[in-house]
Length: 244
Length: 244
DNA sequence: CCACCGCATTAACCTGTGTTATCGACGGTG
DNA sequence: CACCGTCGATAACACAGGTTAATGCGGTGG
Image (cartoon, rainbow over all chains, first blue to last red; front, side):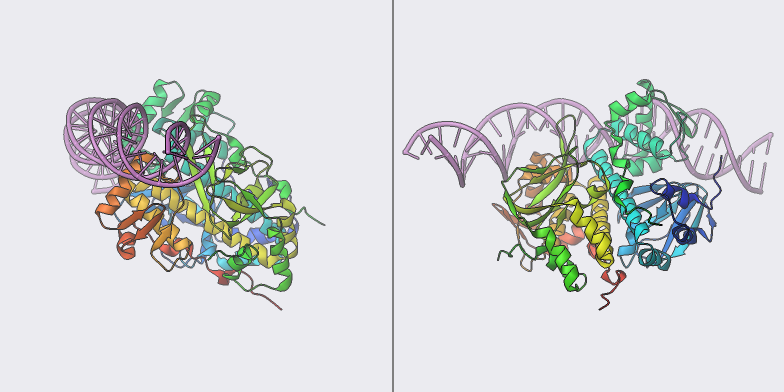
């Protein structure tokens, strides 16, 4: 069930495009020093110099921002195979915290490994561009979700997104997040997340059981939430094709 | 006052890094066929095949998404010098509409011109990566703004962002947007935008006069809104330096 | 085995923002 | 010059979701 952490990133990239051996070697450098983080631990803090990045190989992490009044907004969720902190390459300091939500295995790597990739493997640079664009389109969906949908639709949309992103064939969704975290991601109070789960249960859209969510009727959940999977499906044909 | 449209993009890029002549030539190709669009006109529509992109040389445009129930979310605002549709390179179809908000002069160009840049000028590709990351950080701020700030803070933050992005030295801000558009950008009703302007006027933070907003006390507006300009300031030292 | 703590649930109450409607100012157009 | 449509201001009312607080459950450590 658990994926061996070496290769998480590779597998993710190979979904887009097959890799040359030197390209694979460059990517493998991003997963060299696995370290374990406890649930709740910060991997990296807002305001800090941004010269360490991470690949997640096990567990869930998030990017978050804590405002002056103590409220928190969760900005991204990261699952195994994702690279954490990509947009921060472009800034001197981190713009948000990165926090482990469960026990997390992650591999910190220096900025240098990224710039090496850009220098030495232009085709991989293309893929990073694609990944950044996909992250951007996920943020766009988040804006729409938070700005324009009711609590029930928001939660439904969130569940569908997680379900699609984790590529589960079954409808039982492992969701090791507290309702507070879900609320901070959807800009809802934890109390209202609870009410809204209740609501979705009454509509027979989901069933919940202590950390797993069973999606009763995926199609109906999709219709209900206004979900359109196009924003997750980047076109890999755009990047230069492998040449040798 | 008006900037000649040829060179808008060039100037934007030269803010980050000086350009070689072949690089400049590649970028100039993005501004070859200026066309005028009336206020309200669509430059490009969601769902359409995404193989035309635009540079804006005059006027204001936006990216928007219209939901099934007819509500609209404005996702980005574009001012002269910006490239419109960058993230859509990665998708088969446009994920949102692009619409002129004022009379707009824009130059459509085919996807090919972008891929040429990626092929022939790797250093420019770095800069595009930076730009995409900056757009992403602007979306992050939008999530935080919509998700976690009161209407008054939201509007204040919006005004400060526009002010910084348009690099005006004066405090009189040209804002040729209806309150409906501002509302759709901030996820507020137009009625509440009006109330909130009233509110900011009472706090002596801004004065309004038919399309221009005068920022009375920028520092206080910044404090009030929780604005931190870091998210607009990308580090240009990251991209490869010019070599010849 | 008990005490504790974090978490989900539920209820009662409160408030910020949406909705609907009206009015006046303005600007374009025949 | 009169008309019409668009926009901003304001008011009255409605409601989604926030806040606070009490309860109970399940895991964990002494």
